Image (cartoon, rainbow, N blue to C red):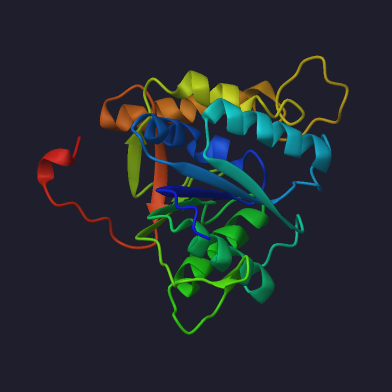
Length: 241
């Protein structure tokens, strides 16, 4: 069974997608693109909250963003490996099921070791999904090989130089609303839970000022940055800002 989307966004933890490319997702949904999200783990090793709560928060955020679907693969938080064949094959099946033209996934380098490992895992799975000699099934039926046209990586904790940026002006309030759907994780002056690097007000402020700074570079209010596994092609110069 095929459940096609134009864009598939993948995050190793619930909230990765919102933080890294939430504005881009919101903008493209408004433009008429279909977007689905896959979270690889439940973030069960996080200091704050719980796996159950984070699943509830992810569902709330999905409704706010109007995603076509949001699934969680239940991989083991903290131990995601780019070389795990079982993990690779599960993502291959999802790529073939949803046949996205574009995949957005974790940063290529970051503070949390799961982020670059998931980045490599998803890139590898996108390649493998296009090999016709790898046979997979969905609901008892064989799947056709499918390889996305582009695999793009959003930016997370570390300030990676982007290969390109997307103007997300007008979408920051919605993005921050989706981020703050994860109320267990981010700034709450009344929370009695342990503080973490992402629970401070400074961290939430940094989400906005990074978008402002990337926007400044291209002369717009806000932008999100991405790196690419291969060169980005355009067919006419006037699409450039």
